Figure 1 (tube, rainbow, N blue to C red):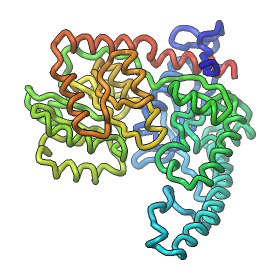
Figure 2 (cartoon, rainbow, N blue to C red):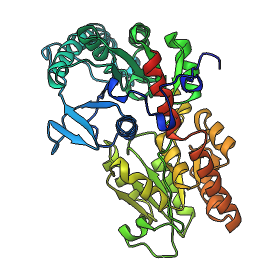
Figure 3 (cartoon, helix red, strand yellow):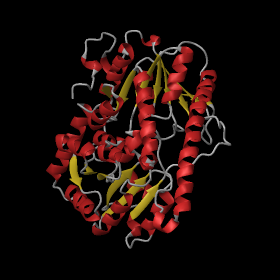
Figure 4 (tube, helix red, strand yellow):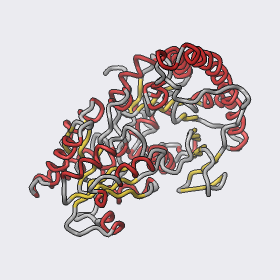
Amino acid sequence: MSAVTDPAATSDPVVGAMGRTADPAALRVVLLLNNAFTSDSRSWKLATSLTAAGCDVTVVARPADGQPPVAVRDGYRIVRVAPPQTLRWLPAPGLPPARTGDPARTGRSATVRTRVRDTLGRAAQAARYLVRARTWAAAIDDAIGGGAVDVWQSEGLVTLPVALRLRTKRGGKVIYDSRDIHLESARFALLPDRWRDLLAGRERRWAQSADAVVTVNVPYAEHLERTLGRPMTLVFNGPLPYDPPDPPDRRCHLALGLPESSQVALILGAVVAHRGIDEAAIAIGELPEVHLVVIGDGGAKPAIEARAAALPHAGRIHFLPSRPPDEIPGWTASADVAVIPIQPSTLNHRLVTPTRLFDAMGAGVPVVASDLPGMASIVRETAIGVLVDPTTPESIATGIREILDAPADRRAAYRDACLAAARGPYAWERGVERLLALYRSA
């Protein structure tokens, strides 16, 4: 894949061990987030690692309950700036649009109303967003204080036009961290084709205006190179350095009062649709000694919990609240197997390499992962677990049983393979080195 760049492979003298720079005070980096920075592990790793490398880092995030507007954590600043509520009187059809109506049953008038809403409402929504990006950029400009900024890093599509506007006002470079194939993910994938095409054109223009584009895996990079017309720099969501306890501390057992003889299959991350939690919950019914522990929060959590509670083996399915990123390695290491049954519902999901795959790798815990193009190549290459059909609970159960019933030497081999991959090609420090080299060369 020739267009994917690895600046760390060059002889750039400013990059050394752990990505440290010869003149660290020269780099001021602002990370622009469209979330509250309470469970965003990639942004947390970026902020902590760049700070450790000597950069002056500011994280701009959305306001969050119980969080101060300005804080300092581990040497970097967090500034919370709410997106402005601009032109709220304009119509704004929600995402996703209503696409399930059957014209034969809803009638021509409903179809016409939908088309009018899509045409006028989404045009107004697009105009409002462009205005909002300008005013949001102005508010961020005021909040972060004066002085030169070297890098404005957009952590996703929503903040990309904000970063470009800030570059116009204050100089510096814009790095677009496309951690998803945004237009093929979640609600964007459900937009009418004409609006997705329009947004795709806008993303391409914005990306080509940026100074560089970063993404998280090879399949994403190949797709984004075609759609955005830019070379990609890879920064995997690899694990931070961590020495998991051996034997594990059984943190899940202690938190839930589980029998010592029981085994834990862990799902960690946002509790939302298409993560395979329902399928995994059903699969646990075939594994009498196994408890499923789901750690995370999300809009679908009440509904998923309710469906799990209706299963005959509900007593072996447990839901815990999300944990801050720095606690994730310990919770992951306490499990017997990490289950990552992402569903093939969108192109983004088919090509995804979720952070939790690398969390398990870094904790020495074997995985049962979806046999999808994004994850499958890594699991096969590293031998860190088994691949399953995520759409069938029977396949998930078979995969979990294969891991948990493996003899001791095979379990040890899984652990060794995980740690070798985590400390080798997928180590987070390698991505930090690439990113710092990119900052210098952009």
